[in-house]
Image (cartoon, rainbow, N blue to C red):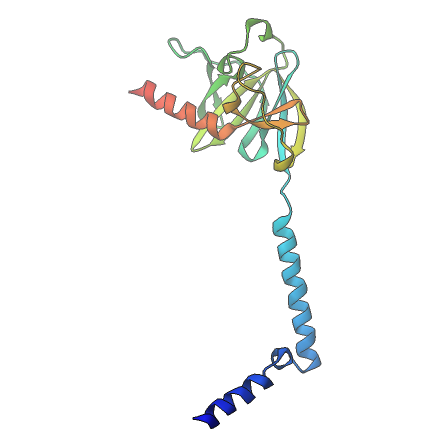
Length: 197
């Protein structure tokens, strides 16, 4: 019994870090290569993904953004077919790629005051798709595009200052409100289903 314990102690002493290290130069090279690859993978997972968005205007100076991931197309506003007895935020419908698309007037949806309801020939429809809903968003003008890092977004203004913060993901550079399109699409889908019943 003592001999067995003695043998185990000897084996334990022999097992060092070097025991597990490769001895051949080719194996050492392979180990270094693998460690570099693992380090690169970890670095990539720490990096933030830049989010791109369509920048548009509502009213005279209010700037907003919708992330490109949800945007299917941006088109100049066409003549919309108005349907009676619908919610006032529905501007009408139009034919988009052989599909009848409902268009939401974002100013009315966000309950903008009357003085922000500008009428001009620069209106656009942003066709979005989210949560199985394809819909058009009527906006006053397209300003271009922008991008942000999610960690750099600032908190939206509290309720009572501008639109309800539940509709926003945050503020880019303190001036462009990034719209939470998933929340809006879910809310609209529920509303449409309710109206159908």
